[in-house]
Image 1 (tube, rainbow, N blue to C red):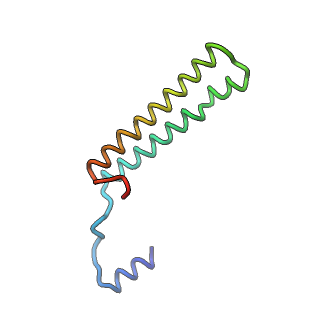
Image 2 (tube, rainbow, N blue to C red):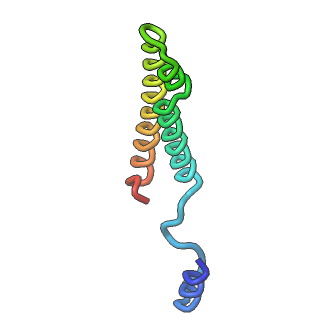
Image 3 (cartoon, rainbow, N blue to C red):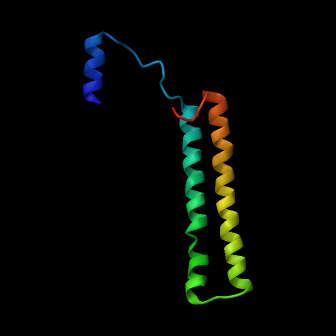
Length: 95
């Protein structure tokens, strides 16, 4: 970062770059990260894995599997909603 600042100073550039990230963009990206975290909780749900490894069968295991899947879907929906908002407001999520 120091090298970039020195190069900007030597080139005579002042102020902030034109493609500076806004607070709204930071907020949307952080919500996308939260959605990824929720998805991981759904995949690695300790309740499901403990019941599976403890030998639960039938309805109890199915209930825990469905619950974990719903948490995963909730996280996926969270990611999709905020990616769409990021794309609409800032012209793409690749920034």
